[in-house]
Amino acid sequence: MAALLGAAGALIAASLGSATPAQTVVGPDSAPARYNRLRDLSVRPTPAIAPARPDVFGTAAIGAGVTFYDARFRRVSMADRDHPQIVALARPLIGLSPEQQVAAAQRAVLGKVKWAHDLDTVRVADLWSNASETLERGAGDSEDIAIVIMQVLKAAGFDPRDLYLSIGRHRQAGSHIVLLARTPSGFVMLDDRVGTPIPAAAGSAFTPVMTIGYGKSWLHGRRLGAVAARTSPR
Image 1: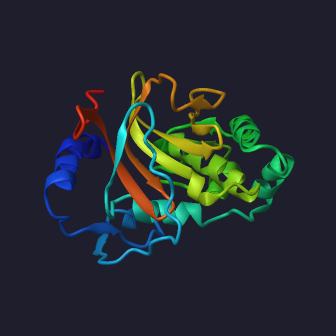
Image 2 (image 1 turned 30 degrees about the horizontal axis):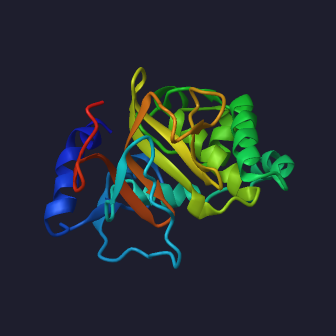
């Protein structure tokens, strides 16, 4: 993740001023030892209705093409939505407003899963666990918790196009991952360090660098004047 954060400026510059380079993504994810194997991908399926651009916390989101994290996102986002534990957590959310759903899902998941580093739970430095795996352990790191909340919301009827994983920097925690949810009231952030959703129009200790959504990824920058963009200094 540190390499991603350090290279974000160069990637944004390339997106703005040059042709798209050859892209690679993570290969099929079946075991931790295989997560760093890459394969070429010339075409990625595009959803008929693209998700909204996540211009959150004062940033401008720029399409990133195919990224390293896309295969991870596809794997965890397609798994466990019908798992009994996910369905049980989702059942009380059905019929609530989207704003009520995101708050209730975050509260329920944080009551079930405590934060723990991947090295302590799965003995690898960085692994995106499926939602059921995290629930069965009762522990996971920031992306694991975000993934569980995402799957609970989808099981409750939330549109998958309105749910995103955002990778960035937290002022105190350093590298960090949160869930973004798009509601009729706007984007909100669900951060395991905070017990309630945070409106994306509010100030935050989190600065997004890359966000992955339903069939699309973005890099985040800050606008200078009308046309230029740069990465956040934090």
